[in-house]
Amino acid sequence: MSILGNFGETVKEHRNQLGLSQERLAELCNLHRTYIGAVERGERNVSLKNIVRIASALGITSSELLYNIEGCAEIDQSKNY
Amino acid sequence: MSILGNFGETVKEHRNQLGLSQERLAELCNLHRTYIGAVERGERNVSLKNIVRIASALGITSSELLYNIEGCAEIDQSKNY
Image 1 (tube, rainbow over the protein chains, first blue to last red):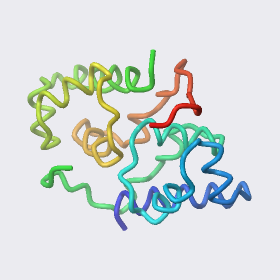
Image 2: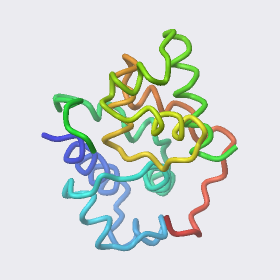
Image 3: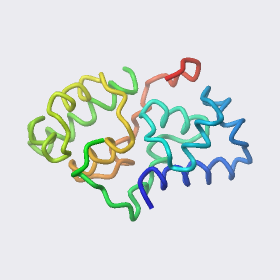
């Protein structure tokens, strides 16, 4: 899975553990519900500020949220992002 | 200090510990030297993919790179990013 896919899965797991809907998480972060949905599907290359906001809304640090995010994802240094 | 300022300082500390120039770090990440300079000055809201690339080039995980990034920075959920 990709880095963005891993991140999305991690956000979803934490959200579900807290019993939050995507809508409620979006409210807590002051982000749009459709954005949270896209993040969870691995469709957004999330910015640092939004990583921190999402982590804060989930009650964890951004470091905890990114724990093992590299997992089995290859880090492709060749492409330009 | 802001989240982006904390992040920039952390990147700079790790880079200096490795004795890397901004130019060399940029080469390792396949990013532009001026981008790395702006990141270190806290002027870039870095994306997740670039956080992972910078961490990988520094030989650490993104979770390690973001350790204590919240530090004393206020997380402003009101503004939209």
